[in-house]
Image (cartoon, rainbow, N blue to C red; front, side, top):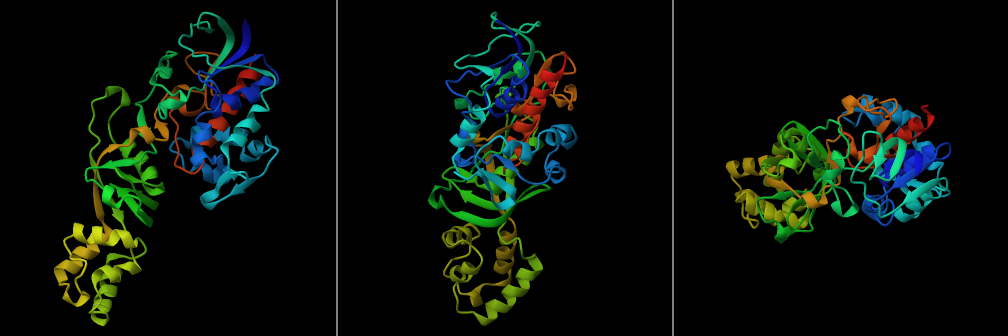
Length: 396
């Protein structure tokens, strides 16, 4: 059967492309899974952090490729997104937006209600697209929108093979928003949260909570820093033979400078001389982390403040401001987004159409676009998906 538009991939970008084009065009949406939106259901820990509600101008400053995203963000705004649903949303810290129900299934079902004019074919894996847009030797379309996502969360259908469906140039493919695996076994202190610390790698700094896991570090501060680490490293997932070893530093007391800590400690160590260092540090550090921290820097937790010499005090201050972890790898199975993809230099940002292949469009994570945690990546998917669908349906 012939179609005006075939959309490959039933995630957020593909669904939105179908919504945008389905009213005026004969559209088929092809999804390899048995249901739509499998990755959407996982976002926000199942709560669905559907977008970030900063104004578009400010929102764009959080992306490396802000100029490319400008048209799509202004074409399909957060207000346009909210209008698709018959329920309300709540806004939390850092302008993160969730459905009032705090259940992602309601977002998916709300989107599916707008697909009445679209033929949805599930359990359909696209393995071949010819130059004249014949899909798997049976479906012919005038235009094709590829919204197959990246390579993260392969259990949702993501695959490196999606990049080879068409002959388009791509950048190096990397892991993004990933927990980090440490060289040191941290299982003895797993579950501890370091609140409001500053994580750094080279010149990149991210402030947020850090959660210690059995294999390493995670939490918002680490997740966002991981993308900066990944972009800095020269590797490609396709190579299978790469070394991701590096060091990161955590400022455990970012509201104090080294000089301020020195002055405070000089004063407090005299006034509270009989206090044990492990008890004194309860004013600054998570309780369960203190003994691990002190043992790492070779200061006995039971030492009284008055017995800590100048050298030990300097070592204490330095490690409070720059506590180092050796990183050996990304926790790849838990990476949230893909960095890299179809090169946006060859995509028209005003339409999402390929500059190389007429009538071929791209949307969402398959493109070389990514943002931090907090609803930014779903914003990319919805806005680029809508623009691709709208453009494909309007073009003669």
